[in-house]
Length: 371
Image 1 (cartoon, rainbow, N blue to C red):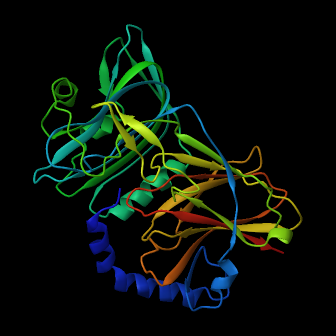
Image 2: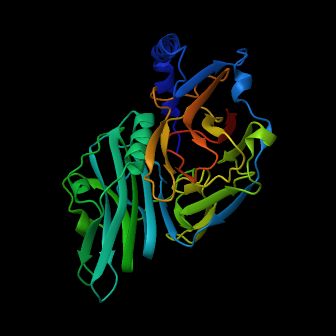
């Protein structure tokens, strides 16, 4: 999900970003910023660094994730990924037009039943086309975690349409990246095809004879069981007793990457990064006082968003990571922290997180006691 072009993009903005960081520090010395930027030599690093690893209990659900990202840079027309699903499903597509001409990239869905098929789109987020890959990744996350209205698509037996009608008119120029994330429920078997074609092509017809494109070297695309991963700490976190603590997301050691199957060629595939998986973290807290939460990028440049809910009947609130910068994590000798909020230990909390495209993993979630 990351690109060589990202780094040239980052380097070209390094001077601007450093100036922005300096301004942010000057303007917010007395207040806690949503994005905390600290040099390794800064003594305040000790305030945020944690040395106690929280061991997590993990459970995945039995829903379906369709992941279309290979070939990531597309150099010929055809079907990027295709499979048939039923029930609770998430689709993630992430593709760059690597051809010289403008193209269309869209998702075609076909009812594979002799019954009427109602597809309920529960959540959706689309960004691009753009050559600013970090921007596309962050905006997709922001849109996904903001509240949305559901919609329904009714399909007659064996009929076809677009998962998102607007995509049939969307022009993707050379070098443009598009990123889409859809949660939907299909009552009957539904064939899902991610397609790229010339702008004048009828995609509903083209999908009938379009070639299925081969994977590139990334080889992440496929169908995976479980689009949700539920996390909670095995031992309740007591800030008075345990002090600062942390856990990882996306390290493939404490948080393992999923295996799946590319049903276009029956090959085994692995989702390096667990892209498209939504993590539902419900911390177990005890003791008096409050706890602050931070996200720290460990793998490099990062731009995303997540959400938090307080209380059983609360509503999820989107948090940009980082909030007051377009991205962070791009300098090795700098520590970056995105502030996720301070909460009473008596609060019932729920955090939602999914790895953003174009960003690097792993990340660390840090818990810090507050008086």
